[in-house]
Image 1 (cartoon, rainbow, N blue to C red):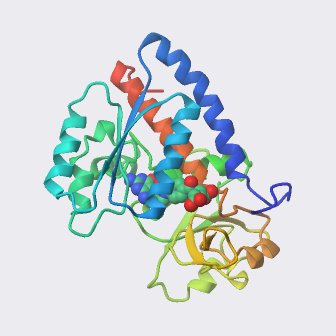
Image 2 (image 1 turned 90 degrees about the vertical axis):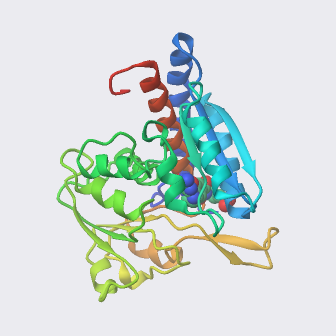
Length: 302
Ligand code: L34
């Protein structure tokens, strides 16, 4: 566990709890005039990490007063059954948000599933319509991990204005929406963003130029000390399980950043666990409330 009294640590856990408490008040007053926001989560199969993440999402929902329905389906469930389930949730006026936990088993077309979710209930923001809205500077739902990172930067008073941000990773879940968000006009944007990935040549040199480095490449301890500029802010999105016979669970969690090395160079750094992960969950609850507000008929939900 990272030492959260260390002034270099960005405490995502504590920040997420604060956000959930703020949300709980808003949810309460909203529910008095309408009903509780309602999130439906579909989990297909028994991937142990996905089970942990979904459990965490349920706990965060409880903390903020959001109602949940978890639909757990066996790994061999057909794509058709998953799509039918989504269609029925799309048509259910009592459900505000729909989330299908990824990854899905190999026989199911992930993209088809994402595109089946009604964009107005797509609290993950992964539907091409919602990614397009973000790219067009008219976001409806911003994906939870990037918006959680933005929230951390804001709350820790890390300005992005004119800064060079390097994002390692180009996924639709993190890398791409993160880059779009930080390059936008306005406060918490106005950054100069470079997207790097597994095929980038000279990655070490590029990342060493970053004022803010965001690692979302999905490889354990990929970012080493020499890839980080002195004084940079380091955001570690990775959650990798590495075998550890000394740990009770048989594994420990490490990020995409070599924490020990990075800690020496960074001015601020997110730990794993307790950094970005809990923020993803808090932002999911925020998006669910937003969806419910729009379902009530609020113009833009804000
Ligand atoms: N549909 N699928 C969909 N939406 C998402 O936004 C996700 N993601 C990623 C995987 N699949 C998804 C998540 O929720 C990754 N992810 C996620 C969310 C939360 C945490 C980790 C990944 C998290 O809470 N991490 C804890 C540690 C959890 C543990 O003990 O394993 C942390 O403190 O980092």
